[in-house]
Length: 212
Length: 207
Image (tube, rainbow over all chains, first blue to last red; front, side, top):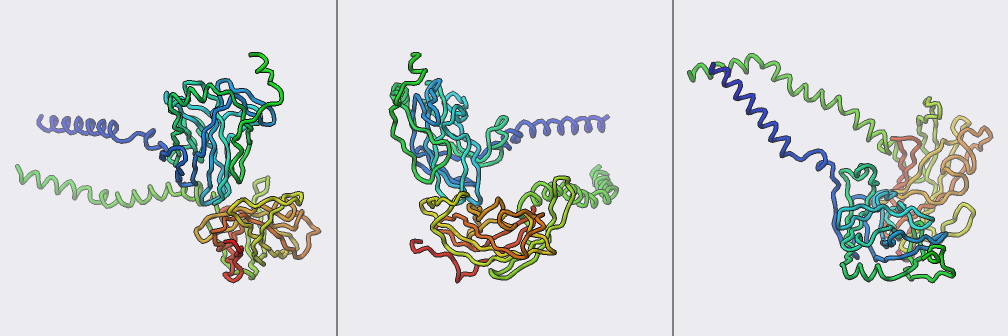
């Protein structure tokens, strides 16, 4: 009888330990989480596969690429300088996260801004990433840059470095950026020197401007 | 009572001693049986095996296995050398137009010399430049064709290929980089390393 009780006690204790372990050890999601390197506008963030710096933040109503594209909200334009380390890389992760945790992909509308960036080893390159965002996304928005793509629930970014850069947009600044009505020239690709950041004046209004 | 307990513990260890001894062996077997992942997913998926490392100017012959569209392995032979290396301030696109060099970067012009092996020209290959910190730089400019190894504009199966030919390539590297080697690979994971002579290091005036 005593022996049976001892066996029961051992089994119960083993199950309890098992439960404790599964409850308190990091789960798969946390083990697979990316290594987030934080930064701010103007700071260079160093990653395993390269480095990245946000050189400026702009907000546009329209982008002029091969065609003029009008934002559904506003285009949040993130100007970047970046460099590949080790070997030539293609950076697939360009995203914005807002203060509500919502995620925005680089816009694929028209021939305007790149969805991914090519990096030559060791050579500084420049590009702009554009995101069509609602007004509520501007204050506290953060830009994310990674080698892997977001894929399905961050599948391409698992267990790898990821830069998260605070764009430093205060609520007041967001209101000011939102109210200006500017058009910028879009560069769909990469450049070896800083991009032209001056707003442009369109020769003729777009059909969208005529509508409203 | 305590006597009996001690006895029982000893008996258990004694009774299971062979299983206990087998545990490390089982662990080793389990690790070994999972090791194919390292081979299949990593080792065979990149340039990881150096076949030969030769100084600049020396010809080497290497044998490679290439897979055609029917997935059948074929043997391909490569006989080549790193002929010369020099700094270059210009880069040209495929139409011959001059492209500006990115700021802070310099071109490294390579001359690769080839010999046909058994009447067959060289297989398609990948060429990259390696600096002293292990950074890899791809070839950005080719003197014709889409691949740096076969005769310009030729293919590995061209029966009218010349007996020997040279290719000229340009890689773009930062000015602070010291080029150490040129690597040529035909199929993962095998590659050939050509070490550059220090005397011929490309040294642009403004380095």
